[in-house]
Image (cartoon, rainbow, N blue to C red):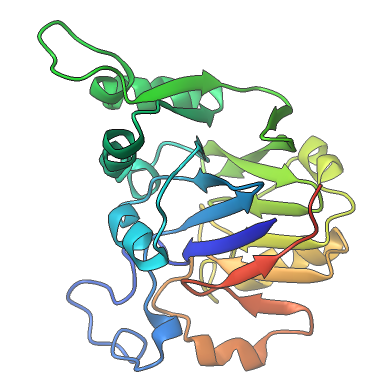
Length: 254
């Protein structure tokens, strides 16, 4: 199983529009961050996590020729507003793509993007995506997928565990039952927004603390703002690193 970090940035992306800070002006390509998303490659299938605002750019950059399924973490704009860019895959392969999300997020997706999930009277194309609400573990192309409930400020988001790997973005707390579902991880990609505190996201210190509490050997911080330079990875403890766009992670197959 191969994991690709498609986007490692927060909702504004980095560089941020109108900003002239050192990170936004950085010449380090790892400081150029598109909005947070992930690609899982397994058994010749591509599973996308979130359709972020920069989806088209990411698909072209990584030369992705098909998407076989989508997992949504939540329905905030930076994680879903690239959904239209999935249309190209339908036009090429004529295959409806199944999309998975917790019931509340799926309700918002279907309401906000009805035209890709249903064919209204007079529409010229059939549904391009198939909505699947999930509230417990399921199997996808031979992989066991475990949705993990997360706290995201006053709301919630959904992380995903697949074997010894988990992706937990947009969260500032992990409920006890979810912590139990995350035992025995080998690799964790987790929201670590910035050095300073934030009410809706783990900051770097808090993300490291919860990952170390779980005993995860490899911790990768994502959803990074322009307050974090990749060069500052020297400040991180052993076993912790910053994500960057295009980063790949090779994991054992199921």
